[in-house]
Length: 415
Image 1: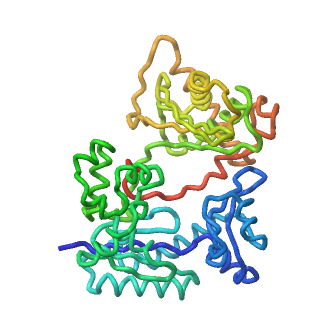
Image 2 (image 1 turned 30 degrees about the vertical axis):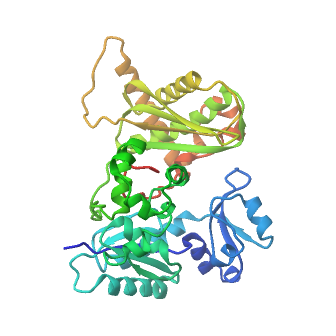
């Protein structure tokens, strides 16, 4: 028996919530955008009125204003969006316990075996969200997660689309490759270069050829296009294993030397280490990400000598990786640190150098600092080096960090 899977997408979610809470802007072109002062000035989402001006998600606020001088831009309010996200999931729970988030505004819901049809449940959810929350959703229905996601994107806003075994060739296969989940611009260009333009072209391509071009991902592409995705919708009670903990930032000004980078890495490294201690984790692999002023970016990894949650060891390793891999061809615009390779075993390997004892003392100091910051605020205790350049160091990634739930195949990025 085929499964019945819904994909529910809250239409223009951030903007819809803002317009709901601000009646005075409800009938005007509205976008939610980042801060231009902190150089996060891009469009995160927009309402239907703004979309009619050709404003696109991801473009700069400057370009958006060129298209629509009367555009109203409001800053994001993630706690409010998370509250609405949870209220929406409360409605979904009336129909299933198998609910898997894909960002704040999207969820897969498995209603296989329900007494009512998938279409009936989808219409009920759509109407309830509109009546109870004041926003709209689009719902896709299919026997697999990929086609359900396609269905929710196919008609917007406030729509229900069923993709079944009778119609998928007429709907899905005639659509461009870029409409398939996880097929981004780079993959689309590569597929097009081989004469593969539609999802149907991809579905009918030789799997061995796709594997020769894309490796293992070629098989995944082929399966997606043919509706052969068998991944399960996770039960809400399923705990996700933490693979890495990280923070990144776009700085108020370009970083132009090693001292600038160390200042920012210190703030990021302290936040990452503190979040690891809160989770009871120690890691060994440090990954840094760099993006220069021309938006060229790359990632590099390195190993620490032992599993640790001590910030100084993380920061020193990040700087070592940085100095070995970046030669200052251009100033840097943003950087990030993450730690992975967590040791779930509490056993500690002693050595003759006394490094374990030293690490233990540093950990106790950092725990004491954590407690002070919890009571009196993040800036109650700071390293003296952070006072040299408060333009770069005066930010708080620990408290500002917002967790955006990500679902689906955690091992897949853009294919």
